[in-house]
Length: 254
Length: 162
Image (cartoon, rainbow over all chains, first blue to last red):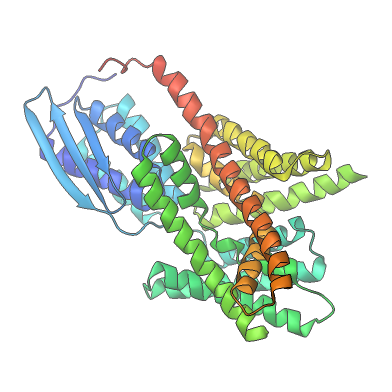
């Protein structure tokens, strides 16, 4: 452990809240947020306690019962970006090992936020390939795999366009699920000899709320039952939105 | 001969995992490992099912393996375990059962005669139970190894008495 440097309590508290907010928004579990924040605060000689609920994070920061900092930060609806989660985790380890000034941490957080996403067309083609793979895993034939590829491509494209317009999350999911299953349904009309069942099942899988689901389970098993439940209900509503999309397609084609 | 089929399926499991890894914007240095983990987990699931294991238990085994390996990968690649585990287990999601369950619920909410209703109800409840238990197996299988390791590790931690 390095020699602890003196820092302004308020500034450190703000930075820790930034870290917690980023982790919460981009898909880390409650325990990971606590671990990362306390790893950073301990390397400056502070004790931190977090109160995490699904829409806000409160921090209680103290050093030998004298300086106490306490603040609350609202969090935005979660998205997934593991590059930021992973980068913050790495940063917390190097903060614990060597001396970082608060400005350095601020600059690193800013750098992490500006890191690029994968190229849009690369994402579209790899996720569509994943859709075709799911179709093969479900014992679909080559034709169904091709349909699953196109359906996933269209669905994800629609979703990316809707995200730009900042629509409500569940509406985005519903429309994307409808678009993807509509392509599979149209293909079933076009090739009546094939049931397209597997293509149908694979086409909406890219919308599966995997991150809320796993984080919900880790939170509940870890004792953060309330946070876990709210994440689980979020996953459940996403599931309902997907089913509604499939339902709409079924109503149109029957 | 079936081993060739397993190998082919494992490739698709790998591609599925990589697709989701890109969607979740993981760091590029972890992509390859995620593909391998996805392939291993999925192959364990289908091989277990081939030798007569129940689909729920097979999924639990596959997911637990991914959970354990993701901790190992996290130490080697300097990224949190969830970066590796979440994309890798998504190909194990029972898409066909979910789809049949949704179709069943849609059918049950329509106007159908009693005879068909009973049959559809039985099938839908069967699919729904499978879906619920498989998803619980995936979630618990992936999170459990990390929680167990963390509790063992914290016993040796020097921060324990703070």
